[in-house]
Every structure is written in C-alpha cells, then in structure tokens.
Length: 141
Image 1 (cartoon, helix red, strand yellow):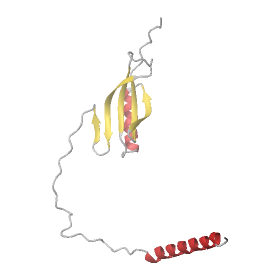
Image 2 (cartoon, one colour; image 1 turned 180 degrees about the vertical axis):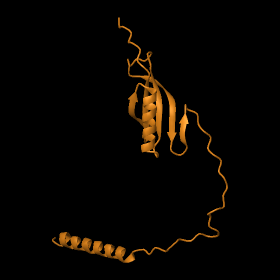
Image 3 (cartoon, one colour; image 1 turned 120 degrees about the horizontal axis):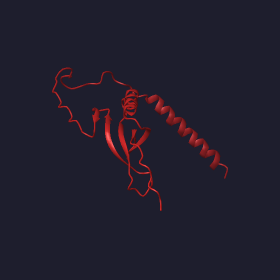
C-alpha cells in the first residue's frame, strides 16, 4: 500500500508570456521574495507580459506531484500596468483633445524619390545573366 506523500509547501512562480503560452522563469517558496523578483523583472522588461501565480499541490492528481492548482496573484499587462488578484481594471475613458492635431489634409513631410535607375539596372543585369546562361547551356546541343 503506497504511503501518502507529505504535503508540499505552497510555491510562487513568475511567468512570462511566450507566443500563446507562458514560460516559467522562476519558482520560489516565499511570497515576499517572489514579489520582489517579479517587480524586478517588470522593471527590466516593461514591454512584456508577466504574471505571478501561487502553486498549490494537487493531492488528488494521478500524476503524483506533477500537477498543481494555481491562483493568479498579480498580472502585469504593459498596456494597462499591474493588476492584482485576477481583477481586471477598466480601461480609462478617452479624453477628446484637439491639441496637436493638424487641420485639413495631411501631406507627406518630404517626397521620397524611388530609385528607378537602380531597379532598372538590376533587372537588366539579371536578364543579361539569364540570357547568357541560356545560350551557354542550351547552345551546346
């Protein structure tokens, strides 16, 4: 008969968004230390999405110590700032402003000339190289 496993301590993980998933960067057992590291990582890379989660051992799992229940402690969204405990802050209402808006039709600051000579030169050289290769390999028959 298997002996019951001793309860595991609560752990805290810092994760960073990667594609459609999350990559775990660090796991620790103290909330204060995990919170400090979370704040440090957000300070280093303020454009990334981070989350601090609490991991609780799932004793009912069939995977014996490999499955955890998690709870969101803090989420850092670079477009909104930090969010605590899964609550979503409402987006601020836009304030209409007319300052700094150009009046009338907007024109380009300066026209940019297309490098037609370079394009034509590259096309001409490519055509000549292709014709010479064709004559060299097909002309031997």
